[in-house]
Image (cartoon, rainbow, N blue to C red; front, top):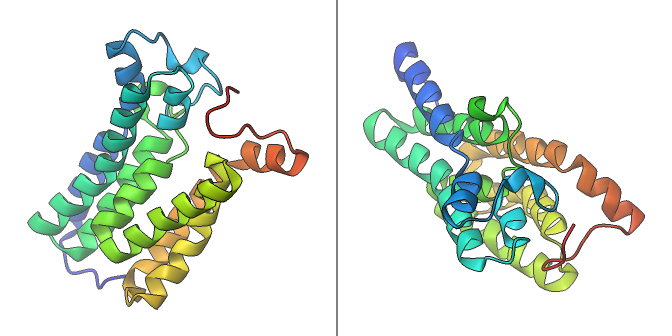
Length: 202
């Protein structure tokens, strides 16, 4: 973790604003904009890009992916520019929590993969690139979005350490643990051989 140098009121303000930004459910907004209905009644009921893709609308899914990633990235970059590195990490964490537990949806949000990757790209871009590459490589082999996310989350702290960003390791571990918690159902289905492949419904 970076040294805490910012004033408490600055960090609290950053935390609240980042959480509210993270709480914007872009998946549901894209589903509405493209006339896809209530995303929570589609496929897994999740509000993220993978479930938007299950509607068959690739454009809506791509926009959801980019916008959900941008939530974490923008929060980190703005907090870093205006306050400092400690605020950047607070912003990344709170934007991520906002996506997982959005106040607008009764604290029932997404699984956070895109926001996780966007946060890493802004926090330490080489680590973000390594995490994205891990996701893509795993997806190419296993054809499972959930498994790809889990492998990326598992290895990201290692990439941070090896690539020279030890000050980010603690935060990345926390984010990774939350990714695993949110994928508990997926982990169970993977173990049972019932997890859908990329492009399948369910």
